Amino acid sequence: MKGPRPKVGILMGSDSDLPVMSETARVLQEFGVPYEITVASAHRSPARVEKYAAGAERRGIQVLIAGAGGAAHLAGVLASFTTLPVIAVPLASSPLSGLDALLASVQMPPGVPVAVTSIGSWGARNAGILAVQILATADPSLKGRLQDHRKMMAADVERKARKIESGWRAGGRK
Ligand code: RP5
Image 1: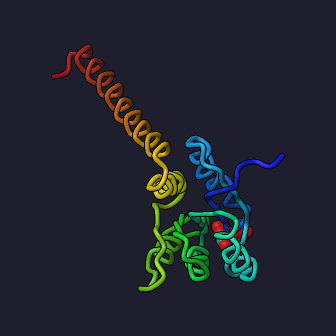
Image 2: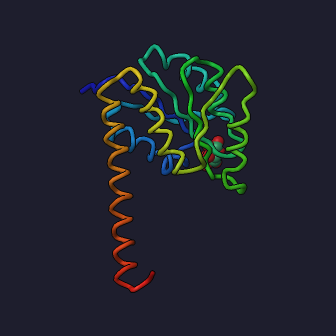
């Protein structure tokens, strides 16, 4: 059975990136955003990256997310083949713990931008949320879900604050 057309494309440099990039997929699922996920490497399979990027818009994809480690160039190469917005997630798969991927992704020269998140699973989650925010500019119901998500986070902080404050008082600390 065919599901709804994916609106977000998640690309990873390797299947070894899946444990982290599945965090992006989880966020999109939570917001009810249809997505697709696959592997394409800018250096091991550049032709596959080009083919994927060239066909993405035609398939209804509106935002691309690229997770890669090492001297990561997946997001930049992807962005060179499309005018869709591209979000890079630098992954900590190299001995440099993702700093190399962060710098490679973030220092795009003018003309072909990519948005870059924090390294690793925080970034993978934020890439999903940022993609939802981009889609929500033209989707009021998605915007509502984002507002609910913000309210939930604020309520969670309130709950934690009350718990810490009451424990502090009970312990007799000033
Ligand atoms: C990058 O090299 C991938 O994105 C991955 O993070 C890293 C290692 O890939 P594998 O050697 O595990 O396939 O291209």
